[in-house]
Every structure is written in C-alpha cells, then in structure tokens.
Length: 164
Image (cartoon, rainbow, N blue to C red; front, top):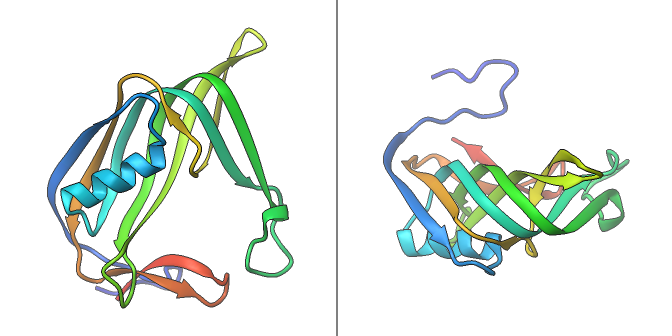
C-alpha cells in the first residue's frame, strides 16, 4: 500500500473487538481509561465513543505555534471548569511505545456546559484532572495492527504515532 505524497505514514489492521467500560463516579477520566486499556489487554486501539457527565474538566490547548519545539508549558492554555458538563465525545489512539511493553493513550475530548445561560461546547487534549460524573461510558476498538507504534518525533521533540 503506497502512502501518497501528503501522508507521513499509513497503516491498516483489523478490529478485534469493541471494549466498553463504565467509569466510576469521581474517578479521574484519563486514569480510568488507562486502567481500562490495561485490564482489557489493549495494546493498539482507537476511541469509538465517550459519553456521560463530568464533574470537572481540564481542557489543554495550544495558545500559539511555538517558534521552536518541544512545546513548553507557557505555549499551552489549561482551562479548568468545575461544574456540570456533558461529555460529548472522545477521540484518539492507543499504541505501544517503540522498544517497550508500555502503551500510550493519546486522547482528546469535547464537553458542553451552561455558560451565561447558554450551552457552550469546548474541546481539547484530555489530561489528568478531568473527573467523571455519572454514567460515563468509554468504547474503544481494539485493533490488530502490528505496524503501529509510538515513536519520538524529532521535528516536534515529542512522542507521536507512526506506522511502518
């Protein structure tokens, strides 16, 4: 399979199963996902969905493109909301770290809340500190994809997913 001129890598595999789990109310969402991945034996996967209520959300976004990499804390904005939120979606990937048996979870999320008597929707990188409310369900497609791995990207000086 040729990757094309605009793609840096391309991989394919097959879906082995869909794994779903309910997150305990009050649990850190990212930590619960990492536990679900470990308990389910997922070494490679993609998020299918995430929904429910959140007590607290921490959205992480870039404020600007840095002049040089890696991205520094001052290049990011962390917005913390501690109020009722609706988890609308989870997206991202799970892959094994190159040369290790460890697995990395890279997730983004969107959530809505009431701000100034209107509904506002926000999104960003999922970091520790986002706390589950009630009925939080996560679904992950467990993949058989032996060419997927997390590597150190020299251009951004950060980890990223790559395919052989």
